[in-house]
Every structure is written in C-alpha cells, then in structure tokens.
Image 1 (cartoon, rainbow, N blue to C red):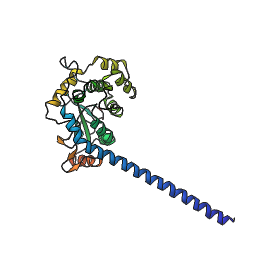
Image 2 (cartoon, rainbow, N blue to C red):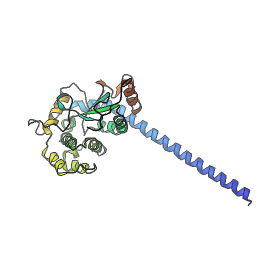
Image 3 (cartoon, rainbow, N blue to C red):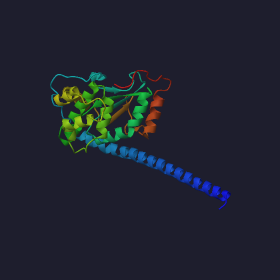
Image 4 (tube, one colour):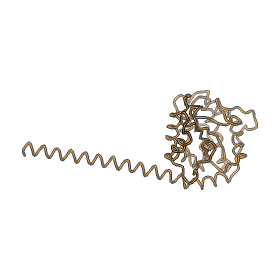
Length: 272
C-alpha cells in the first residue's frame, strides 16, 4: 500500500470516527430533550390530579402547634411564614406553597430546580417558600410536619436551599411516612455540607419550629388555596398555567423577563 493510499485510508477512518461522535452527541441531546419534555408533560398532566387529591383532605396541625411560635431565622413575609431564597431586592417574586410529602411538589421542584437557581443567582427572581402539611391529613402520619420542621431548622443553620433540594431528591412515596422519622431527616442532612451538627439534631428532635409549622399549615387551609404546589409569580398563579400557556422552564424564564422589563436585577447576597 502506498503512502498516499494509507493517508487516504486514515483520513477516511478519522472522518468516520468524527461522524460517529457527532451522531452520538446529537442522539444524547435528543434524548435529553425527550426526557425533559416528558417530565414537564407529566407534571402538567399530574397537576390537575395532584391539586384535587391534595385539596381533598384536612390539614393536620403540627405537634406542639398550640405552643409558643418560634419562627426560623430570617423568616419574613406575612406573619413571618415565608422562607426566602434569592436576593431580597430581586424584582420578581415566586411564591410557592408546598408539602415535602406531596409528589407533585417533588416533580415540580425536580423539573424546575435548575431554572430557579439560575434566576435566583442572576438576581432576577427570589422564591418565597411556604410550608403546608396536607398530605399528613390525607394519608395519615407526620412526615409533612416533621420534614417542615427540619427544613426550618436548616434555615436556622443557613442551609435551607440545599436541604430543601435534598429532601425532594430523596422524597419517599406519597403513601410512605418515611419523613415521619427524624432519623431519616437527619440522614438526609448528612448530604448537605455543614448541616449535621448537634444544634441541628436537637432542633429536629425537639420540634423547635412545630408551632410555626402549625401556623403556616393553618394559613394554607384558610388562604383559599386548592392544593399543593400553589405557585404565584408576583401574586398571580402560574401553575399549572399562566393564561393559555403551560408552565415550563422556558416559559418561566420568559414570564420573569417580561415582569422585570425595565427593572434592575437584585444585588443583595443570594440565599435566605
């Protein structure tokens, strides 16, 4: 075989390898789009079911709800029931009422998590979380209450965003009351850097924020909400739709941009 022939063969082989690599890359992107689209579609379809099911039961008061209310550090909003993530001066506010046992809440957070964090870090939007406990009322158990108290304890430690995400990443089945065990909540805390401290453990085990959780649960049941998640952008409902448009990561970014037109992004430190 001549040198010229060998060079031509090598070039052809390299082109074939490049084409195969490009095809694999295209297929990977395609699969990603299909998975993301399916997740949003499932979320949109399940939303109606979730709202009806979530609204069917009665909210179960938190243990110790009659005791003195101890709000987590930095809680604000009406009656001090909101835990904020993002710059305080961000022009857009997303209000989220959720229950850590609620499967639709879990789907919602897992689909939109990256979008939320991008908008928070860029100063475009802050999220104000309100915690409900309706699944305890629907299914029995105390997992909603216990998880909400633990999340409030994480807020005291300055670790609410990471722990909030970890709870949804490790969410049990709706019919399971795994979050009713403080040991499980403490195990999940081990996934968050710097959260597993004696102070956090004592806060979880002693139910330091149970009365605050009870107050938040009551605000949900008397607030006219139909189920979890309830999601409002600047006070207007955006879940599962805003007008005729379904909520998707792309649409949420668009809606925030439209709401923020002519406004400066927030400059305060992110976090709560």
